[in-house]
Length: 386
Image (cartoon, rainbow, N blue to C red; front, side, top):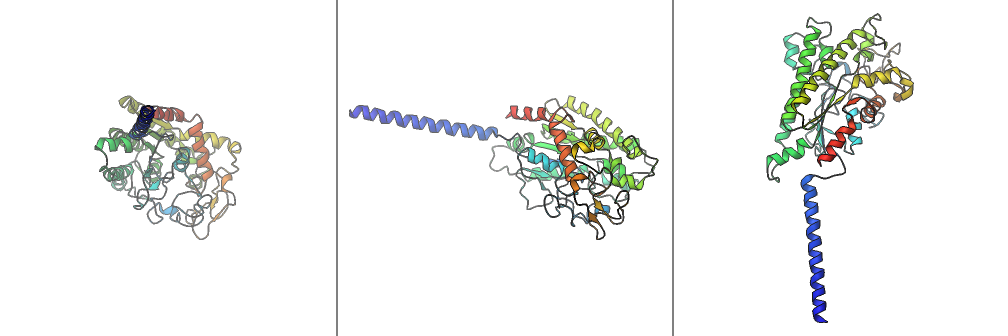
């Protein structure tokens, strides 16, 4: 009986030991492969005011919207200004929500928790470098931040990554770069705005700006980025600001500024063609084009379907009138007021959109037919890779 008891004890001990080893091995393997129910653990975002979640301060952003730190910015969701150019959340905020991640912290906030990604976008940013505008005497309302500036910030962030507890820098890059989602928000619209009615040909801006975006994407791909969303430009001729400062005979079939939208449409066409070349060069990467133009146009032509009553008038502005917009007294300035229900408006402050419009755009990108390849393809490929 003693021998049987002893044998039984040995058997139980062995089973417990083997189970413990298996659990340890499983957890270790999961950690090594970064297994998670979330497809992405972090996002890196770039772009202009439509993606900027706090890098801009009112004193350094576009002067026409220098009151972005004042009420009523942020009133719809955050309850206070967050240096976002809207009444609430932006597309990148809704993307983070969809991926079950916290809102991205701005890069220039040194104390912010950046473990789930970083937002490098800066309001007023251009695809071309600031020197281009200085050399061509196109310095109206520009900021010294460009897409290249944001790439430099990302490089600085990479150098700050904690590598001391990993066996190699390559493993650090794999976790922080290869497995991350890179969201390249709208960039390039300011290039056209700053060169409007100048002697610089539109074709020159289109060629140089799209090349700059491609060079930026190639730099990310060379670093190991595998999952990239590139957002096109929306019809900026439909913004309140554009409508206010252009003659009424300059209109397209949407009722927006034809000359402005024509440039933007051509820009998107050129960019998509160049993205195809980049896909051929980097077949291992998923480069998704978010068709902002057609998604925006779809909603603009069917506003009631998405709950919008007002397409052109700014929710927050001064003077009322046709557009409720005065370039001298923008949203946030003492004379300005905000509408009672921003969710009924597409335009927020004349140059940027409402949270409601950003929410609809994000939904159309994620669940609709306005991404190439579809968003579901991106998520599926990421989940398959572990």
